[in-house]
Image (cartoon, rainbow, N blue to C red; front, side, top):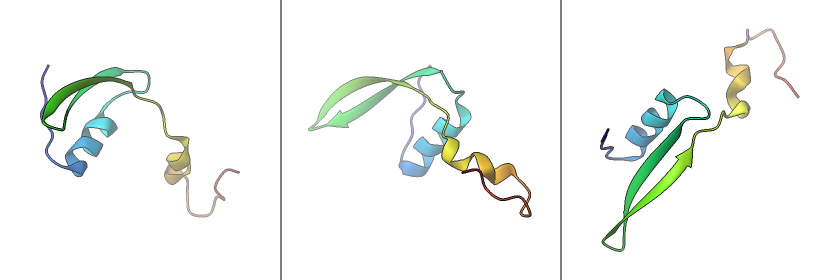
Length: 60
């Protein structure tokens, strides 16, 4: 499947739609050449506390 992303926000949205552990392939243009980079999506635990109620303290 080919999904083109233009801009940082579009890339961030695609990452957010992916599941932890999922392998995705990024194709980037660098110095005018295409490079394919395999990437494994990982869960970002830094934002895990955002689903908590405001009265609950964030995790350590």
